[in-house]
Image (tube, rainbow, N blue to C red; front, side):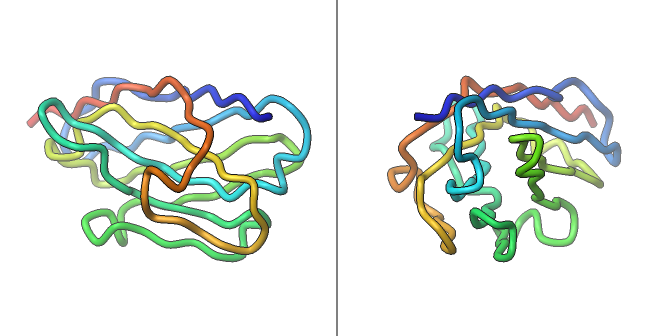
Length: 125
């Protein structure tokens, strides 16, 4: 079983950048498909980005395409989300999630078995 811990959130101004990290404990991180989700106050959790177990497949929500980049370092058991050109509407708690499967990515929160505790990202206007 994998345990996930996010970090890197904070308070930034519009247009700034942040990189979120998700450190995974346990073995076989390279067998997990990973995802990033976010949840703003009063809103449902929504998909942000996903990456396959080997990092060969990625995909993004339309509202972050061209601004966010998901990546992973399987040697370091770490998932990343580089966020550029941040907007106030990006303000949310960001979560990483994992599902043990090779070669696929997933878009729905219920398709992931393991979750981190979340990290707050606040973008001021």
